[in-house]
Amino acid sequence: MITVQLTSKRHLAGVTAAYIATIPTTDPPTTVGTGGSVQGFVQAAIEQYAEQLSESTNVDRIPVSAFVRRFPGAAMDAINTEALINPTVAAILAQLDAVQTVRLGHPTTTNGIGYLVSIGLLTQAQADVVLHYDVPAVP
Image (cartoon, rainbow, N blue to C red):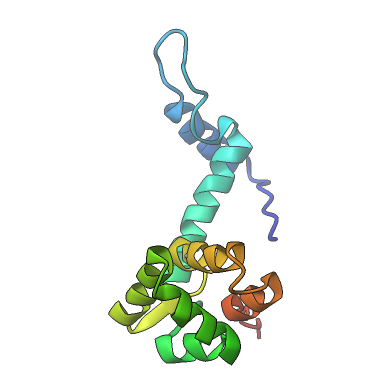
């Protein structure tokens, strides 16, 4: 986790004003803006920016062939067998066939792997290995 601390009065004023602008002006307000607080607003903005950086740098994108090799052989055999009777597993495999690369941190990927864990085709430890990617070292 990275913690960000704003110390510049100008930056604090700017994010506070941006947050206030998200609060509905209807009376009474039905929501309290994005994130519910200035801190929540800033956190959401930072996460959105970090997602854009992750997408543009492809830090979690690997070829499908490399992704499939991360599965233990017996688990992959069980997944292929299950796909014959389980339409959700068949859809997961069809999605793999339709792409050239897999984004390890993408919700579609993590949800698919989570489903395989939930039905007992992978253990959580195996899922962690399948979804693992390294954070680049800072020089």
